[in-house]
Image 1 (spheres, helix red, strand yellow):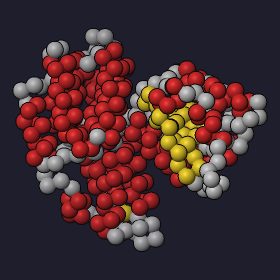
Image 2 (cartoon, helix red, strand yellow; image 1 turned 90 degrees about the vertical axis):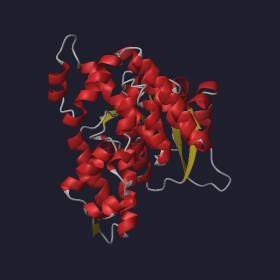
Image 3 (cartoon, one colour; image 1 turned 45 degrees about the horizontal axis):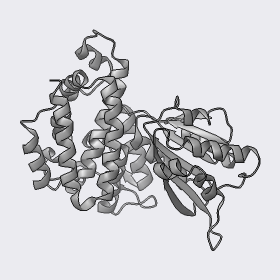
Image 4 (cartoon, one colour; image 1 turned 30 degrees about the horizontal axis):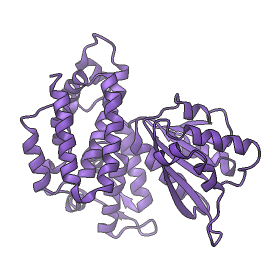
Length: 344
């Protein structure tokens, strides 16, 4: 089965317990990650979470089916959460499906695979598309209108009542990243002591109370300087990041979002087309059109294909090396800016 970000949850409800394997891919890794979390939360009893990585499956393809069929010492329920890049899971999926078709994995635990750098055209996805017991979810970067709807849905679930203007402000402040939006909503709920059973209304004052001290504390300037190759401004932006204690992982996520947006736009842009008119037709936020237009000219489709997985790896590296995250991010920003500057 195949589903998009708009209908994957309805499709999962219709499939019920017969669908036990989800392959979540596409250029919006944040959306795929958020969807995995929501699908897992919807399980009647998710049980223990067991995580696997792409390198583990690549070196031992049987590992997936072994873990999906295994039980804990106390017989508890479990689910598998797998993060891979590209085709890392292909051989493991083929092994899993071969056993399942022979009836040897019918009672396997649910498996959720978030595959960055993969699409529904990848070899891994093609193994699953025609099956009723598996689902391929494809996620694309949200536009502002969709993101506002998603922010309000997150807020409703957390017991926070949001007006349209505030939902839009949150959507813009996180650069249309659903993971960061979820974190903002959680902070608002804690600040307001809101819950699903005791909803509270949020206003601009309450949101500003949990935000950074100024609007300049966001990620946009740092993202634009790096991807535009502005080496002259980069040292100042890195200092600002350190002085204001801006979260390096947040910056990496913002870079991922912009790179995915550029990749999506680049695929639609025709040779010789007027970029300004193209961005207007694509409903790109008017304040971002100048920077995005410049970056589209500096990052070709092939270079973007390499940039997106590189940023995904950077994100994981920062998470696993939090003590030196600022230094690692600064080094990667310099590398990205140098590549972009070479094409200015």
